[in-house]
Length: 112
Length: 118
Image (cartoon, rainbow over all chains, first blue to last red; front, side):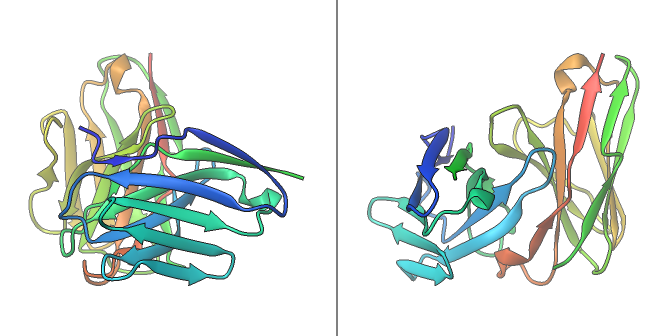
């Protein structure tokens, strides 16, 4: 039972364009959502997060949007840079559990 | 940011042997550490929550006798894969929680350990 889903295994965009990575979840108890970036043979590194009381959080080139009614979140990267090429995981948690439930990941390739 | 290390980074062993993986928080104390497993092109699957000074809490479907977890100090948790078999081959990642659980951003991940069981 995959509670967090990233239905696109890969995404390719041109440098300078917008990258949009999507994530869906099924558990309505989740109230905190995070995006991680991961390179091969390395652990994930935190990128940006959003609480369920918000619908948008922005940090530089990265913006996360949350649609609670649709149980959907997305990560926008603009402008995309070749260094953004990595696997992006979304993760969800319920407050005070400390547990993170991850999606399958989306491999982003930004072409120069 | 905070640093979490894992040792070894990769290990190859024969079927039937036991393998110990260490996870250390290098510059902070972590009362809670998590162990994940990642199959190729799959998500990180939470295996267990390791609590300093108490027994680990395992996720459903994870054999506690197969994957022994010891959180002996505030900076070290170990995962021992006992009597390893080829199906245990995977990428194991730990994370250490810094601060309260209400701040999920303070969960820092180790670089992972690649286990190959022949």
